[in-house]
Each structure stands twice: as structure tokens, then as C-alpha cells.
Image: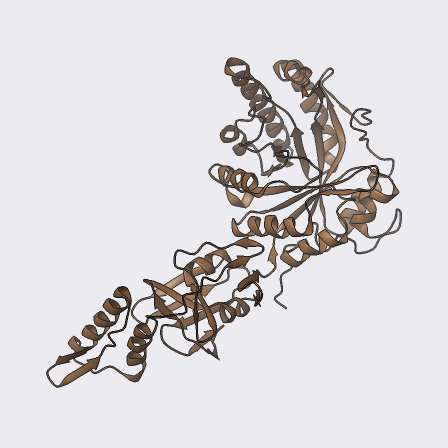
Length: 473
């Protein structure tokens, strides 16, 4: 089809999809009516828009950090190159995006590395940090969406991009992001020592270990005794106690600039149901005040307190459940006020909103805490990876209440007395840590140091870095 305006004319190929055809006509009319003939660059835009009419119709799955990326317009193969929707990919990689309609330019800025990528519709050139680059296939408009070459864009931002010919799919590994990694320091035997995994050598020796990854440690040595309102430093039920070398641990963490928190926890069941003594404690103002005073005294040696009271609300309904929520809010507020008055911080480790334990009023608790750890496990056996559907739902529900910059995703690894490793696997960790990155969470929390193993830790290292360290290879 040829459009004419006086002596000016532009050819618009007719073999186009309706959307692309309309776009090409609109661009052509704009050029003709503007009173100027199309420049070579503008003409190439029209040609590019029309040429995208019949991309390869094969559906190409794309996985980012092991998780499928759902595009509103499917990726297309053009001249042997995979093109994907720009905005969805850029935002999945954590970039800020811009559409410059006047110049038909798309731009992405990585807020972590400050890298910039600029591409123009129909042009075979691009810019990365202002430096010119060449493209095999230009950015194009398909199905009313801007599609860009996946490999070029991903690698320009430091991501790894791999084409799998056997499955006709693409995997993308996002660039490392600075993210807080909190490790829970608990006791263990020689094979499961938190010291050995954290510092790389058996006590009292030390090396790098996980100090290049872990930014904060919650010391799980303090167990609440609800019958007295005091803190037990040697709890027979959980097996946790404050070790004799606890000051060496804090000193060594300080040498590596690792923040330390005093973890106060309680988790006990009777016949599979939360032991009711915790409810009696929360109802007792004298007991809760005594506990807060003692916790605040111990906390002076730490950045603050990580409070982990588990199992609240199990099998409760009506007024019983409402009372549990009120009582725990009151205790958390009392502790928050006492800590903040001493310039100390409060972290709350909470069961997720889709768990079996509804006794946590998240909207009321979140403002009291400096950070929230969402313990996204317990949906299935601890010996296996937690189901992704429930973990994703837990994160998304939490983000409706918690600012993403104060939310950490709790991840679980186990090792039985027989030495069998359970919980998250390297494969499931790639997906869950990748999910935390895509949701922009502040970090992840690892229960517990000493049982993760190098194969799982290497996956985490490949995805996140300890703030403020950040480098693109």
C-alpha cells in the first residue's frame, strides 16, 4: 500500500498484523503530514514495525532465576534472536524503565549498579552507559509491545543468558544484588557448628567462611520461660544455651562488621498443639514486664533483639484468638519501646499470614519493628523444599502490609542426626532467592548456620552480595 500527500509518498507493506499495520500507517501519516519526508532513520522505524508482522510463532519459555517469566506478549524469534517484552523483563531484573515516544527510545537504569541501557525501535545500534553497541536484531514493536533482544539486554546488565536447544527455552540468571543475609547462630555438634560454617574454621580458628555473605547474625541462645517471665540461658527442651565462648563469637562478628542480635525465642507444643503456658504469660502484665526488663538488660551487648514467639493462635477462634492477638501486640509494643529508648532495634520473626498460626496481627506489629522476618516454612515436611506457591503467596500477602525494604524471607535447611540434609535444595534456593530479588525484599534469613553446606551456599553467593559490596563480573 502506498500513501501519498502531494508529491510525497511512503510505502507501507500490507502483510502485517492489524496492530503493526495500524502502527505503520500512523507513523507514515505522521511523517507525511509533518511536512518533511522521512529521514533514513525514521523510514527504518516504519520498515521495522512492518517487518515484525510474521515473527517465528514458536513459543519460547523464559526462566529468570529458575522462575518462569510470564509475558503479556510471548517472546518471538526474529532472525535467530529471541526478542522479549522490554518493560516486563527490565522490571523483573529490578530496573527503572523509560519510554521516549518522541524518539521511539526505551531506556533502563539499574539502580544497584547505575548501568544504563538505551535502545531505539528499528535501529541496529544501542548504548550501554553511553557507549555505542551494535545489535544483530533491533528492538521492534510486536502486538503493541516493545520487544528487545534478550541476550544483548540481559548481558548488558550483567545477567547470564543461556539458550537451551534441547528444550527450546532460555534461562536468565540475574546479576548479583546487594541484599542482607541474616544467619541464625545456634548450637550444634562438631559437624553442624555455626562457628565453623560462619568463620570457615573450627573454633577458635577463623577464616573467611561466610563473612563475605552474612551481614547479620541472630544468636539463638535465649529462650523465654513463660512460667517465670525470665530468659533461660540453658533450655533443655530446645537444647539451646548461651555458649561459654559467646563473647568470642560477638568479638569475631564485630571484626568482620557483622551485626549481632539477641534472639529470644519460644516454641513448644503439647500433643501437637501450642503449649497454653505462653497464653498465660502474655495475659500477665507483671510477667511480660519482667521479661522485657531482663531482655533489655541482656540486649545491651547486641544491636538489638530478634523476637521469635511461635505457634500463636493455633486452633483458636473468636474471642480467644482476638485476645491472643491483643496480648502479643501489647508485649511486642512494651519490648519495642524499651529497646528503642536504649537505641536498640527490634526484629520480629513471624509466621506468614497463610500459615496455621493466625495469632499475629501483622498491621499492628509491623510499625513496632525495624525489620520483619517472614518464616515461610511449615507448609510441608521440613525435610523437603517448601512449596513455591505458598511461599509466593506469603511474600505477596506480607508486602501488602510491610514495606519491602524491611522484609526478609526466612529459608530453612535441616540436617538430621543421621547426617541427612533436608529443607531447601540448591535448585529450590535459586527460585526462592530469585523471588526475593524480584519482589525487592531487603534480604533473606537462613535457619540455621552450620547445616547449609557449600553447594547451597554457592547458589546464594551467585545471586546476592553482602551490602555494600557490588560488582558486575
